[in-house]
Structure formats: structure tokens, C-alpha cells
Length: 299
Image 1 (cartoon, rainbow, N blue to C red):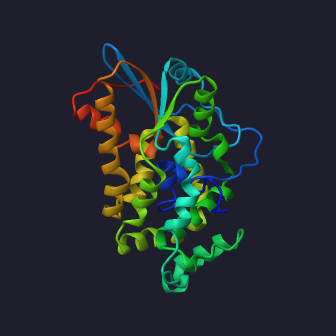
Image 2: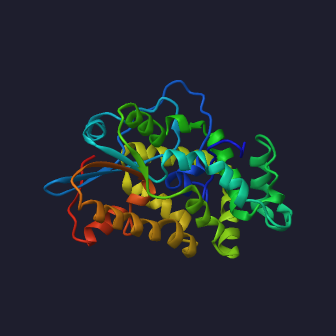
């Protein structure tokens, strides 16, 4: 499973579903899915337009989200910019295999107890064993997140990034990225031990309701309900400030700087990143507004 090009995980139970594309992959079974109208913003001046679309990296099979204003943005864009370009997403499994193992195995029972251990074992029992003793805390969380995605019948083939990449490549338009797979995984690898353990414990304690809440997150995304998205993300990440800074705030600041620099070149860009990066006081749109750039929500 880890040898596949893509895999999944959750920070808490829902965070990574909204934030990290290389951390969500699963096989859905439903033939049809819901209609969705995800939130999208536009930053523009006299010769540059940058559409910023909030994504879900895996969705119920058949979800329809690429009509209306999104379809117009896709048609108008000269290039697509994702968190990870296709080659980096393909490399994610190999990087995970390199970074995830512990130097010395540590039993899950030595890391989790009570409700957390019960939640972990119940989730593990829904499929193949995780082999968690041999992995770092953050990597165990990744494996748990993959199982949640599988159980929720979310499909990366229907995720926004996959379908956008197919569309732009078919049209001969370039597809770029803001980060590498190693950079994304190092966000977790370099968290201090206490923060990693806190994320794992939280994820395990709430494993029993994870499928339901991932579904609620996807539904809020489909409604373009940024208030609910902000609430959900904040519930998971605010309890662990080091994780919020590394996974959200610092990256949003870098991406905002990229947008500001890119506004110096003419053309039209579709920038598609996890929806959790676009909400709240440290979301990319708010940061751009603070820099004096005109930001309009167009869907």
C-alpha cells in the first residue's frame, strides 16, 4: 500500500483531508456523487488574474464540481498550480518509505491508552494491520487517515487535483506546484515529539467518528461553506500550536508571497490548494488582502 504513488492521512481526524494532497488516497465505490460548488477567489490587476480554488484531495466518486465559475476559470487559465506537481505526487510513496520508519520500534500500547488505544485498534481491525510499531507517530497517523478515507469511500481519482491535472494536460497547458513531496512530509517529520504524539492521540481518540466527520467536511466544502470549514480545521489544529504554525500559517504565508510575486507577470492562473488553507484569519485570501491586493470571492 505504501508503495503506491499516493496515500493518505489525517491531522486529527479531518485536517489533512483539507490540507495535504499527498496524504489522501482511497478507493470509492459509489457510482454517482453530489453536486458541489466549492469556494473560489480571484486576485487580479490590469493584466493578471489568479483564481484560487479550494480543493478536496479525495471525494465521493462521481462528485460534480467543475461547472459554472470553476469551468470558466479552467477554460481561461493559461496554467495550473497545485500544492504538488504531478511528478512530486508520484514520488510521495517512496519519500514516505524513507522517512516514516522508526529507528527502534515502539509498541502502540506504549504510545496510546484508554479511548485512544481502543479507537486505534477498532480502525485497524477494519482492514489490514497498520504495523504501527515500526513507524513514527506522524506516520501512524497517516496510515490511520488512509483507512478513514477508504472507509468513507473517498476516491483520489475524483479529487479536484487529479481531475484538474487531467484536464490541463489534455489541453497542453502546464501544471506546476508550490512544494515537493519531501517538503510536505517533513512538515510532520520535523514536528517535535510532543506535537506528533498529541496529533496521534487526538486522531486515535476520535477514530470512531472520523468517517462521519470527513463526510461532513466534504459536504461543507461542496456548499462553499467557509465558516464551517474554518470551524472544523480550527477544532483539530488549534490545540497543537506548533502544528498549526508549520502546517497552516507558515505555508500560507509562503503561498501568499508566491501569489504576490506572480501578479507581476501577465496571464491567467488557476491555483488549486486544500480548502483549509483559504479560510480564517491566516488563510491565503486574508493574507493577500492584508498585503493590499484586491481579493474577490467569485464562487
